Amino acid sequence: MALTQQRKQEIISQYQVHETDTGSADVQIAMLTERINRLSQHLQANKKDFSSRRGLLKLIGQRKRLLSYIQKENREHYQALIARLGIRG
Image (tube, rainbow, N blue to C red; front, top):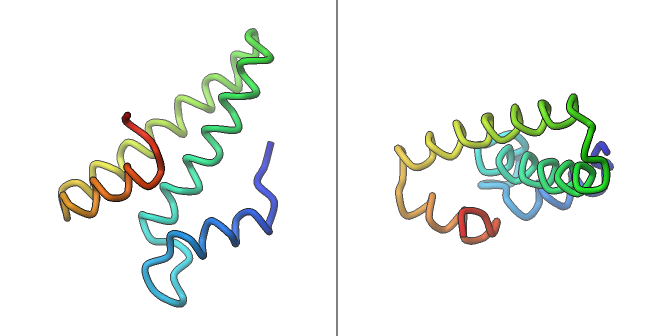
């Protein structure tokens, strides 16, 4: 279920704001989105895994808070990020 180190580096390199960025809101949202997608696939196969469902809801809440922060700071950047991640259709 956990992301591999190689996949984390790929996500960081795609969404980093500057050269040494590893923890900006963009990177955190991209990591959370990847984890949410993997967990959603797991829950489709394991419908009765309620503890993982609770973890998924916590991840979604955390991503929602980070997205609202970005939306308050820069609306255009927020629109570009959600389009790039393919969320909120």
